[in-house]
Length: 308
Figure 1 (cartoon, rainbow, N blue to C red):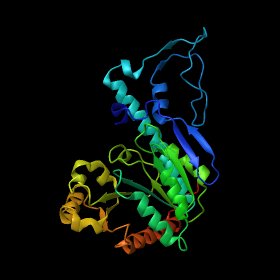
Figure 2 (cartoon, rainbow, N blue to C red):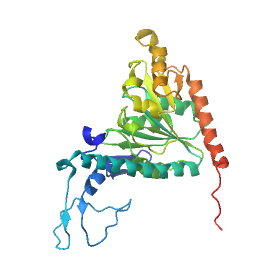
Figure 3 (tube, rainbow, N blue to C red):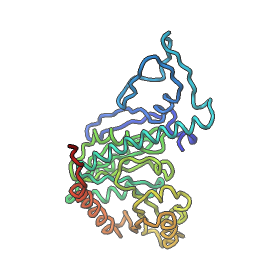
Figure 4 (cartoon, helix red, strand yellow):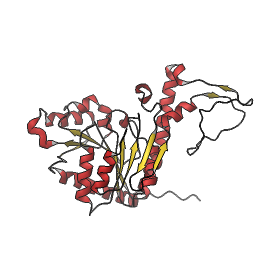
């Protein structure tokens, strides 16, 4: 969990709108949780709403404040667990809001996850170019630093925002919500979220997506699903990428698929090469089917009962 690995400590997350050049600095959920892991004995109320902007780290020198501060780094492990619980609970609440927002606009949102270098950006570039005349594609691009991948997405032809997490190792639901405000995807479109290259923390953080798509390249070990079971268990689809390199690497396709199914018996698997196009028809068919399912779900959902 991030409080143990140090992710997000002092992180400055920035969001860059690649269409307008507007850059926004965001506060990290982890910092917010640290600010609130205190035993406050206030005689007055504080409004800790989602959009508040004052800094809780400011020193209190007013006589009417009686604080007994308990900081996480000086407390027992139970305080760390409390912080983790608060971070995930807040993220899950925001993810539910994102999911409702997507559903109301018939938008298919996908969370693409992988190790660094598995080929997420190359797959997105190829998908955007091949389907530009058929599907409206928007991209939220996540990296710790640089807008290199976001620039590649823009050059491929899709609107994009770049989220740089600093020392953070994953995207979070509030980052997606802010990204959507800048991106403004159209009704019935597809929003591709390319997460930070990491198979650990992104498994824990729901972004409000319809499905996680985990990308495994043949240049990695076929035991990756066993080493990172939480990610492969959370994914609906595994894409085995770079199959054009199979003649040149020692990789057992059958074993990698068996390992993924051992962790997640319900996972679907596609084999393709984003570089030369082999197998992309299966990926595009999956996208079309999922987009149609999103539209169909809007009409098949049960209406809320009318109270009398």
